[in-house]
Image (tube, rainbow, N blue to C red):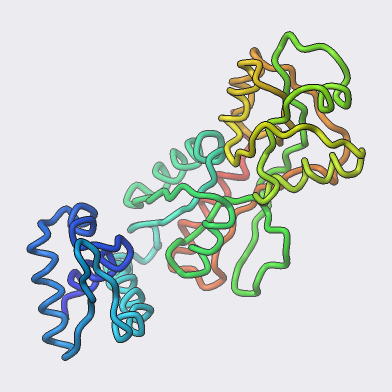
Length: 288
């Protein structure tokens, strides 16, 4: 059985249509359809239920998807198994938006210098989404906000940095933090996001109830709105906030209880432990 055909089946299931899967796989829809038909003949049962332009997995297809994903994953690792130092092949790393622009570029430079045959695959996302993807086995590592719960024993957590909470207002704004939070529109770091809970805790501890203009789980977008005078906010001092410092008033909030912690999560039984060690070391290096 061709693992390429299984990969195409997985793409159809994830995309929801043969046409979308074809674009993802850089093939024609006819080629994808032929691969699915070949798999159905080999397995002896239907894999997809087609309705208009959509394609849904049959019950039998859904049952075999976990094994199909494992087969495709194992096949992709074969080439690297002959590499005795474990420094070649794909390394799938998930990262939240601030890590993508602040922490990851320098670390990727170090990784590719020390492991020139490595092929990093970067997957952006939210902390919650990346955690779930890592648990499903579709990532080798994830740079996320520390989860607000105990980690499963199958995962390893490497602390990377702690980011104190800061108050943001446009550069011309005057007044105390408390008064401005009460008077100005509040651009809220989404409290449902793992990193947003610290700002929510600060407001609760200080009995502050600002008027929320909008919720965002994108710190750069929050800073841009604040710099344009749209309102004020409470955010962690992420790696990269310096780009907005000239247009914003940045006031640090005292208290370690309000700090956001960024961590690297990896599986205990990782496929590329040597590459992950280099990645972890480079992420822990002080930025220059």
